[in-house]
Length: 255
Ligand SMILES: NC(=O)c1ccc[n+]([C@@H]2O[C@H](COP(=O)([O-])OP(=O)(O)OC[C@H]3O[C@@H](n4cnc5c(N)ncnc54)[C@H](O)[C@@H]3O)[C@@H](O)[C@H]2O)c1
Image 1 (spheres, rainbow, N blue to C red):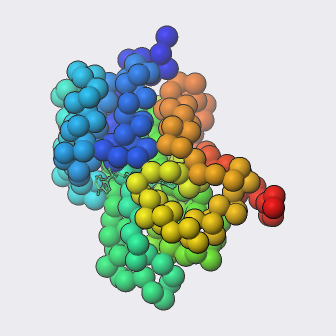
Image 2 (image 1 turned 90 degrees about the horizontal axis):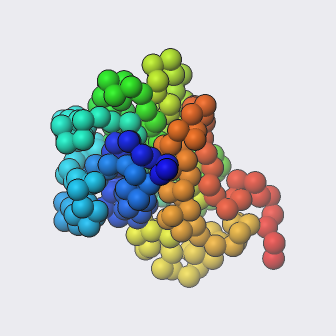
């Protein structure tokens, strides 16, 4: 039996990176998937390649009407919602130290990375309750757990907010069949990090802190999301699953 048989999942940010890999994997595990992204061409291509077990909705997760529409689309197309994987996020280049980061960048990052997760939950929870319960997977980051001299103040703050929000949702909704957990990936080889990692010095500055000495591949993070989404995690809620190659366990790393 596949691990997501009978489940309907909404995956935001499904056009690229981990969201794309997750859309493909969740369908392979028996789910029916609503691929959500504001990249219409990219998102549609992912859904089309998956046949009639996937559908695409264009939505900007920072817009409440769009989030309501993506959930309504899941309910009207597949008749239920069991898994809400709030994965869409941005990581702008000019998000840096507390003194340099433009206010407009702070606002944009908060709108998408933090408010977008809230709006997804706000739209999705009533549909999940109506569907008999379900699992919310909110994507945070290891940077929500430790400070970095290579600062990205808005991104880090937004991901810290995701951890706190997810705990609260887990507690508030636990008796109504909703589980909510955060995923804290380490650095992953996806388009989000491509520009940063194309600079050898900036790449080396980060790799030195990873005990495993390499970036994660998208499927290694998606495996953890799949577990949290599935009934195998039926007693796990309010937790944060760290998948970081050992970064948060390290004081010094091997030479
Ligand atoms: N790549 C990493 O190293 C890393 C590490 C930790 C956490 N994360 C988090 O994982 C998640 C996925 O990242 P990724 O690396 O796969 O990124 P990615 O850039 O490859 O994909 C992100 C997707 O989200 C979409 N998106 C962005 N803003 C949106 C919006 N407002 N509405 C709808 N869709 C939107 C983009 O179009 C894109 O398709 C993000 O939340 C990111 O912060 C990434």
